Length: 582
Ligand code: ATP
Ligand code: MG
Image (cartoon, rainbow, N blue to C red):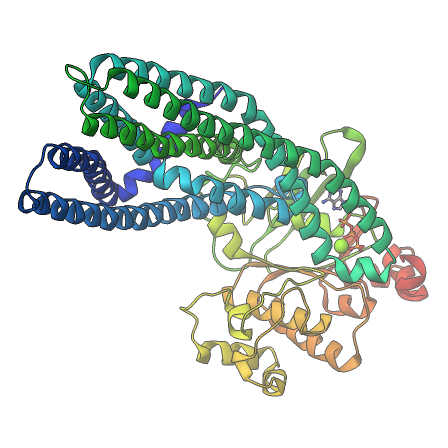
């Protein structure tokens, strides 16, 4: 049941990067074992010499040696722990960043299935559970295995029969531990899955707290939370029981072992058998197996936790994006032509849920297309297909003559810019929010872009200019300001196609005017889709596209449509968009 192969492959992949440290760590661990084995030998000799009537002068060097070795052992123990932590964090951080990168590359379907909270639990929680596995598993299991073997061999040197009996006993304890562990692993897995669910729920609810409170959803959410907790608790209890059982076997080992040694010791003490120092030595050694057995046991815990974690990590790593991102075709520079070639799209696989139906339209480079349609008609969906958050279900899209599925994703993201209905801001400075952490964009460039967009006044109104901190979400800014910020983002990357998904809420006239002039600047010399909720916005469009229930019911030049009294567009203009569409 234990996926040994994925354990090994994951371990070797990430430990290879910290090879030198691992080697030093192994050296320290081996040194520690040797010193641990040496210590009781010194005491045993001390006892036998003392009983044999050795002079104090002979005993003192032994005692001093004991002190030196004991201190050295502690020093090595500290160094080993430190190094093990270091190796653990280094390797798991690599794993964390690989996972994060992977998750960010996955398609939108994946992100719809998994809440941010759940992903955090998987990228961080599961990996943290792995960190001890990475840092110490090999060193501790191999090290402690060697230590126990060494102890048993040395006991056998003292007395062959006692050595044999204690070896059998030790093996039996280990077998018992293995058995308990097999029972406990599935308990652990269900508990981790439960935790992820809990975190996912919490993450989602906390980020949606404004809406939940405003809509009176608190009661329901608390109720759901209680439900999840109620499911979580028994699993948690059972998984702790698994630990307790493992822990118990360690105690049993100690009690039975000590009894066994006392009995064997009294039996074989005397001439031809064991010396008093020898009995002490065996007792001490048996007592000493307790620690490594305990370590091996606790590594089994680590191993079980890792089992669940590794399963989930490899599962996540093996999840492939629905979007094939291996394309390399370059997208031409300058304004991009846009062709919908009998393109249909559905979010789900079944036919009935098709959101966009057989769209077949060509748009020349540099045209500004005003897109109109009722709420839910599929406007934003069209934008998502154009930016390749999704691929068409049927037919295709061509941008500058290139199918986005064959284009390099990096190129595509650079050449197509979108401002969505609700702009996501990050909890950092205005500067970083504008440049998306691209340090290559200097302040001068930023200022001149802001000036081009008519945003200099806005910048001046900020308390700390570009260094003003923003809240995450859209906390610090109004919807209009957030959109202005997003325009600047687009302007900085100079795309050949821009898609502006206008916020459906009304803005105040001052912001509206700023947006107007910013839009004018952004769509200049570019192909543009302006998804409009207000008729004023489409005044500058070259073409008009009206979508109803996912079908383009009208498409043509704005002036032509305007002049034709039978067109939908002119009827819209006559009666006002709000009446006809909304
Ligand atoms: P609005 O004017 O309100 O912004 P819209 O025209 O942009 O509306 P879309 O967001 O494109 O509308 O939605 C079109 C249809 O697709 C709707 O019926 C919606 O329920 C559905 N839809 C949108 N996003 C998803 C999604 N992520 N998964 C499944 N269905 C979706
Ligand atoms: Mg929309």
